[in-house]
Image (cartoon, rainbow, N blue to C red):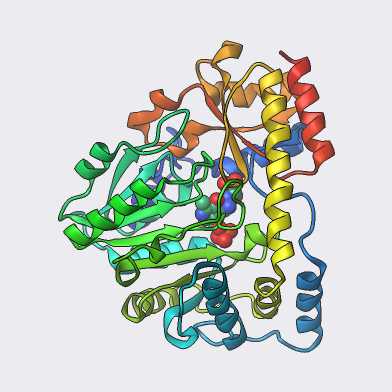
Length: 399
Ligand code: PMP
Ligand code: GLN
């Protein structure tokens, strides 16, 4: 393979996506879903639901297509969706936004994150603090932006950061602190103490907080708290979310970012040259979703909580130790009790051994910290109850 210099190479090799032979490796999600398809194993790897979301949302998209909503929407997003996002932030969190100035629609949370990090960083002296393990796109985008990744570990089994480690990671070089809460892959929800410290550190060092709240409605114990609602946080926070998880429409890629006008404008400046716009017929449909009644939002978290419990019980019965998640699609389990020391090898053998696919936590870590997470495996609970029960039986039988 030719040695192609530049951001492309820096990104893929920085994020570990190039193998020793120089070939590009697919993301862990693509690799594990392909393995599930090949072997017929139950896919508890990639986090996507195996059932459709609310009918009213699906119907609204069909109607929009039939009614000719098929051309470029406005650059910031359709006014009705911008308004629905602002209403949602006020209804659930008491945040009052001006839809015309404080909100931007993006191609999923992924583009919102990419555009935010590209807008806010740009040199190797710019540091981006993330909690580790982290969603895979963070390291790739930080590398694309040419900035430096600084990580703060979240450790088994509670996955809360140590405040001293957090304080040591943030400095005047920190441009951005990325906060994924509820957290993928661990399902952890940050404590109030941690959130408050993040805001204090950001203020003290002049950093911007970029949050990834795509699991905001998939919480099991207490209502979600956006960092932007903390005292002093709003003016330095970009809040990102997406429709994929809440409405089981992961393929639609409708996301959004909200925050103070100057920060949102900086993100828009970059975003307009990434996708420009996307998903015109899906935008009014997600506006319908965001305005669904409280019962819908109560029921999605309740349903997923039951699935989390079913999955957790199944994993314990199969010999795993389980970290009980407070939110998100995911449960992290320790396979050490089953004799596994390397979850990466364990997960590659699991389809043949048990007919189940899962993801090793090392897929979400930097190479330097891989050893700390070596026996840990992420399982997705966002599947039908019968699928989770069958997976549990298979894992128990393979013990
Ligand atoms: N952030 C986290 C934590 C995720 O788990 C995901 C995907 N599931 C994304 C971002 C990407 O969201 P989207 O599909 O809206 O781009
Ligand atoms: N967010 C999903 C997960 O963590 C998958 C996203 C993807 O495939 N890029 O499993």
